[in-house]
Length: 428
Length: 68
Image (cartoon, rainbow over the protein chains, first blue to last red):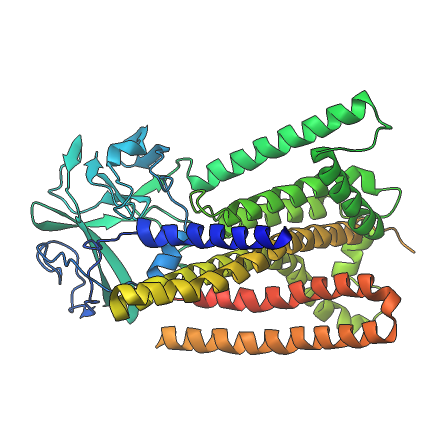
């Protein structure tokens, strides 16, 4: 009997994983197949007519690019995968624009490139971009047709930059990505517009919050009705994890008398991160990669930092700035190291969570990408070989990712508890 | 060039992670062999420490992905 269940599960998993092969029928005529590594001329390439590409150049076949696909699938976007449109709130120097992203006319098989532009905004690879070259109609809806986008890699000042263009009436117009506040470190910077719309990550967070709210509320109602009854259903799962956090994380690190003040926060952090991690693992749920996003984890780490700073007692600050018990000439050195540690601890919280989840997603996407890599090499037979290779690897990776989801939520929580405990520790 | 260096850097980071997690796992095996009753505590401690070591390596890998 159990053997039948295992074979049924295996067949089900095989069918589930063959869906990406069938559904992702890319005709990538939007990406330029060969990288035009155009070296910039003496004056930098602003303005028309000096682009190294021309618009009729939409190639039909191009090779599958595993790196670009992986990066695309772990990024945030403005539409859900089977285009579920999301509201767009965009601000440029022309003012606020609020509309639904269905105005971009993205078709599900077109790799989330919009077939229409609206008020000078286009949808390229799932995110909104704005046309910056003049001559493009900046008001109203403009039909771009299929395969209107292209990009080229250009070497400016020794660094490789990717410039993106939209083709309209056979002329390329440069498009800008949204403003990111990383100052150009991760390829962003201030551009011509701000994207303030609720994106996939926001919807994911809202869904997780609703899910947690309703499950905890149902458990709490059962407890209030009959506190001595044995737990059943969702109550059982939640009670196990809550008691685990209380006994293994809160009490050992914060102390038996004082943990109650911070316990709700620890629980919120744990279940929020766990919920978002697990949402990212659901196969066809719209490829949500919420906790892999550095901004989200940065906000969580910032909240922990603020909490620890506000609740720091005199002993905590003394240990940082003027550590007792060491000779005086060493104290400034130790203070410098401790101040660095003050900022590095939340920084590592942020990077650890984002790195683990992103790396897991990239590994899974690379294994699925094997199907297409082999398909490019050997045709449809290659697709078959790729599928046979990819299924066990991906199953294995997804199993590991489930463990990593729990462990990373737990590690974040236990480190938060440890920092809070260090901050409120009394003199002993 | 920076892309190649980034890839080399990621590989070096994984060497460190491999050594670190290997040591954690090895010591955990020895400890379980010495005292099989404590295997539950040892196993959970091992997974926790492995998460920390892996976190350090994955920070390096994440940054190497974003270096243009």
